[in-house]
Length: 173
Image 1: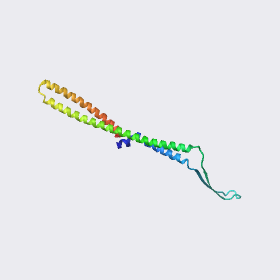
Image 2: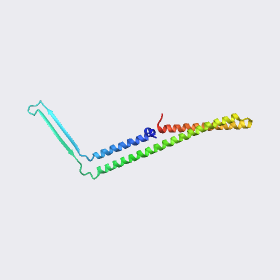
Image 3: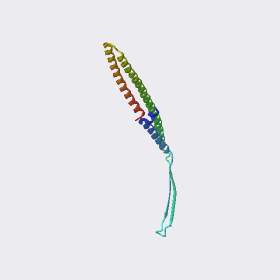
Image 4: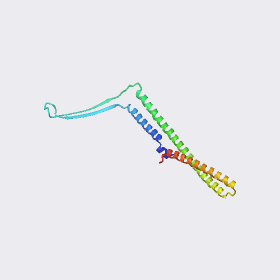
């Protein structure tokens, strides 16, 4: 299940959406801070002797919006809701991926057991066919062996399908 979580693009997308929502919340919170600008400049001129040769300036500017009719607060609450929704989506996606991985593994185990049983059945039918003496029992044993081999092929096909599903769920190559 851990490997399926690490390799699943839906889980990675859910985590990325959560990080995006967290970043949007940080931006919404920063709207409550004042805008502050600090500036400075220095000029050295030697072209005109009537102007002071070294001039420097320094300043600070600040602005803050006191009344915005709840716009910033509403935006912050909206971003908080999106963050909670993204976290809930992560949990739902993780649960879904874990469930699908467990189902694929259970299907794989069942297919593996069915294949092992089919192989044993073919072996038993071949042994029964070899020990048959009269023509009627030989014919019946051959029919049973052929039927067991067909069931083995079906079990092997089911095993391969279950293996492919499991491989796709856990992201194995």
